[in-house]
Image 1 (cartoon, rainbow, N blue to C red):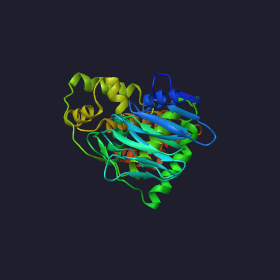
Image 2 (image 1 turned 120 degrees about the horizontal axis):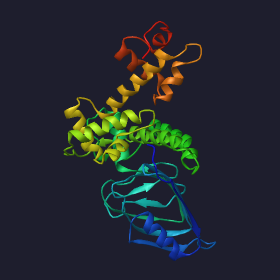
Image 3 (image 1 turned 180 degrees about the vertical axis):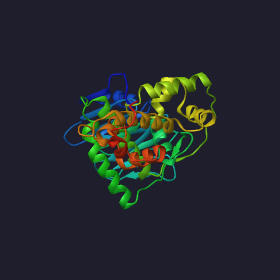
Image 4 (image 1 turned 30 degrees about the horizontal axis):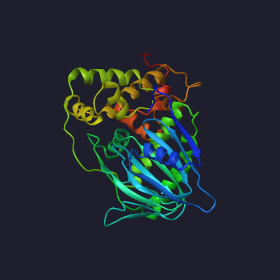
Length: 322
C-alpha cells in the first residue's frame, strides 16, 4: 500500500535499564515490562524498526533476562529468536518456545506474557486490516476477517517463508526505499505469511456501507489504478472498514473491490496496447505499469475478458484507437 505519510524509522540503543524498560513498554503497548540479570559483559540494548502502517520490520537485542506482558492489539506479529531461551504465552498451559530462526505468530486478539534470556529477536508486525485483506484475497473471500494461524510450520512451508523473508528484509529495512518498492515487498511478505501459516478467518463481521461511499471507492480506485493497492488502502481512503467495504461491494456491485480494480486495470492495459506501437511497446511493460506483477495470471484474466491474448491486441495495427 502506498502512503502519504513519513515512513516509520526507530533506532534506539543504550545501557540504561530504565531507558530500555520505557522503550519496550512503548513498543509492546504494555505497562508490565521487566529487565534484570544483565549479561556478564554488562547491560546494553538495541531496538530498530523500519516500515509503514502496513508492515514494520524490527530487530531487538537485550543483554539481560526480561519478562512481562505484550499487548499486540489488532496487529499481527511474526517473530523469531536469534538464540535459545525465549518463551511466549508463559501464562498458559501450552507455552511456545521460540527456536532460533523458526518464525511463529504471536497470539491473536489478546495480551500474553513472555520470558527471555539475554538474546536477540526479529519481528514483522502487520497492520490488522492489511494482513486480513491479503489473506482474504488469497482465499477469494468476500470480506477480510480476524485471522487464526496454524501453530507450527512444516519443513517446506518454513523453507519458503525463510526465503521470502530473506528477499524482503533488506528492502523493508531500508528507510530510503521508495514507497512503491516498500508496498510491493509488504504485499510479498504478507502473502508468504498468510500462505505458510494457513491464515483463516476466525470470526465474521457485519458492517453497512452506503452507495455514495461505494461510488467514491470505485472512482478512487480508477484514479489510482496504477499504484499497488489493497482493500485496506481503499477502505482507508473511503473512510470505512475493509470488512464493510468488501461486504458492500459484493452486495451492491456484484464483485469484490479487488476484482473491480483488476477490471479497471485491464481496461487501462487494453487502451495502451491498442494505441501502442509493437516495435516500441511490450505487453510485459504495459502490464507491469498497471500493477500486474504475475504475467501468467494477467494473460489469463485478459483473455477471459477480451477473448484474445494481450499480444494479439498489440499486433492489431488496424484496430480502432481508443
